Amino acid sequence: MDDTNSDTYKYLEENMRLLDASVVIPSFLEDRLMGFIILGDKISGQIYTIDDLNVFQVLASQAALAIENAQFYEEAKEMQDQISQAEKMATIGTMADGLSHQINNRFYALSLIAGDSIDTIKLTDTTKCTAEVKEMIGQINHALERIQANVMQGGEVVRGILKYSRKGDEGFDALGLNAIIDSTLEMVQFKVRLSEIDIIRNFPPDTPKIKGNMTQLQEVFFNFIDNAYDAIVERRTILKEDGYRGKITVSASPKESNLEIIVEDNGMGVKDDDNKKLFTPFFTTKTSSRRGTGLGLYVIRRIITDTHKGKIAFESEYKVGTRFILELPVAK
Image (tube, rainbow, N blue to C red; front, side, top):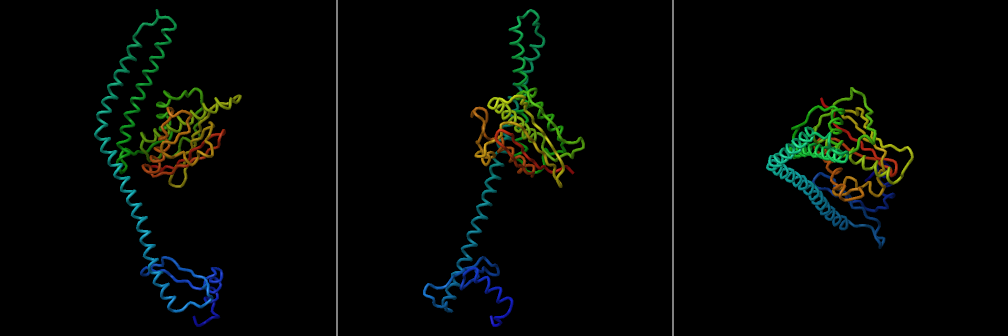
């Protein structure tokens, strides 16, 4: 550079000193700048020669090729992951198509048997039965009702797998949050003692509807309520606090083109060490491996982010509670 007094020269000189650099060789691939090779002074103290610079330029060109190859490898790996995921979903779809009819036939048979048994119990004259027998009949009737409800839910899960494994908006409708919660509570009542907790809905009646798949969102809220109930029972058992009562609060408010939904409980919460693992497949915080497979929250995240193109996050404090924050697209 001829003009050593120019602002550009002074700027370059200042930054070269900050880098402690004697030579900076740009690494180009055609017209794309891929990086720089920055060199300090020679150990010998000698000045870099034209031959030195020519060698460095060759090295810079090789480095540009190496960088491009590395980028190509990363892009190819990402593409392969996407292809692999698509193949898995296609496999699930094929399996679900083939098995759903057979599975639903079994569910239908179980539902008929349970329903007939319930009707038989209702028609049975128990007036001459002892109190112990009446109690036993009541327990059997309750168990049959649970079987019938879970059979119905099983059929919905099979249909949900079919819809989840297919691309597009099949099975998507404009859904009200109250309708989702109501239908979920109908299913979860056979697993959770709703009389022991408070379910609070903290959103106005005119809350915007969301675009979603009812079966899948029922699965999401079923898991939220089920997990919250277990956390509430755990806190009640361990902390033994006077006046403690479990509470699950569902709040909602518009956020740009989405509806932000917060599901919050005052259960036991999650320990800090477990926070990062919560959405990991097969990880569970439940005290017995028989209580949970560790797939629930992993599947929830996939339903929210992949199928519904939404967002999900959570916050939790041990011995205080947990909150899940969802964002789902508003129906147009």
